[in-house]
Image 1 (cartoon, rainbow, N blue to C red):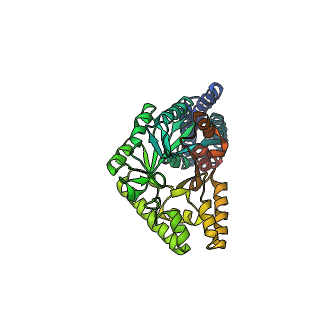
Image 2 (cartoon, rainbow, N blue to C red; image 1 turned 180 degrees about the vertical axis):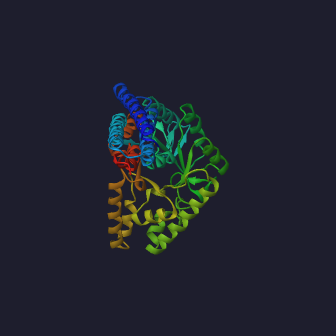
Image 3 (tube, rainbow, N blue to C red; image 1 turned 90 degrees about the vertical axis):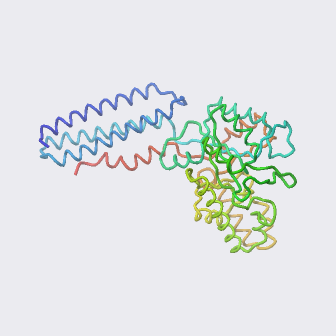
Length: 396
């Protein structure tokens, strides 16, 4: 490239950077925190930062092909400094838009009933559920799935005020839920015991309820709901449930059974729901320990769910048999409690029972003690980490 052509190119670059800088300044002046267009604004800022990176790459290519006079070097460095300044302005605009931390409430339901006063505490009346979904909509919450959460953690954009709504066991009464959710364009997540699909499952020690069959689950999936694992057969009261196995088997036997079960469950999901990300596990009976977390990771689960009610009873039962193992389990329990706010392997959900009225529901949704917290500007920070050093470099 001729020197005159290169300098003309640099002038056009400076003009382009001036335009980007003005647009970002205007954006900051007109920004209202909590506005309804956060996603669109963030996407625009990401495009602008990527544009700066592309300009830097173009400078590198053209600079390498021209004669490097003192004037060329000086103007090139001026352009690079301009890119850096505009890039940092974009970053500050993004921080003003979103902030540093977002709370993601992860709700846990079991069953929904037409009855106003269902017998089981795990069953919420349809009336209460409708009120709760209406409250979420009015407060501006936008339900997402774990697919979107995982995409976000890898750098994609997350909706403003996200919430994840989960239903354990996949009871047939979710057909009642579908119409309510559709009113608000809401989606949710269903955790299934893969061996028991379409079969009755215990709601409590005495009552059974039918579950959705495979065809019904596929219909939910086509409507944007996510189907996740609740184990293959560890959540059915009896000799095969996870608590019984933990109390009666040796550590080696127990871990081997865990691995075999979780492989079957993930295999089922991979076979029947191949188009979704099958990396999410809801621990049966809220059971989890570091050893079984490692097993689940080995099988391919990267996001794991429990509640604030942990497996303390199982640990106490273990004391009678193996005090050292019980001590280790208790240590693991406290460790996971510490990580439950930030580590996707220990997401503690908010249990919603029929005893939770609307006032309590709102408190749980907004209460810091219940939230899974993630960095909101992951996409930007990942982009910045890859790019800002490059933006500051002198051309080769």
